Length: 126
Image 1 (cartoon, one colour):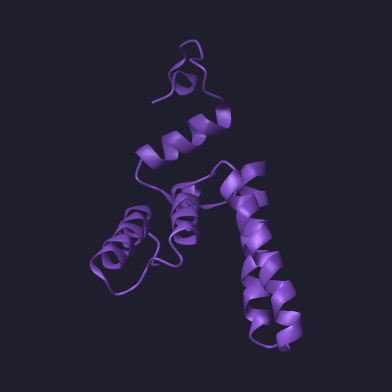
Image 2 (tube, rainbow, N blue to C red; image 1 turned 135 degrees about the horizontal axis):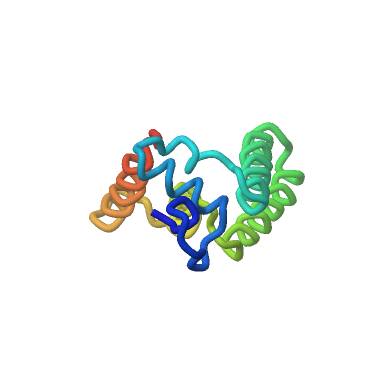
């Protein structure tokens, strides 16, 4: 556990990190899945926007679809450049990176298993 909670001198950790570590060590990973930091809130906002745009893509005319798809790709590029605030964010980065490689071949099945493993370990269904 971080020295913040044991009374020792801080070893580079901060209070937020120590709170998250303590909660996860005690078996409650719900805090680790919630956006508590500025980075996590930004990440959540961008992924929500990507999701909403993806839903809209299916409903617009072809000439508008291209612009929306470019906007989605630009947002995904932004996510790839950000530090992932959680293990779920790492899974999302892998899903973006592997989006065209999740086919039915052996490599695609293995990539999906990796993503499923991350979701299972974090306690969230894929």
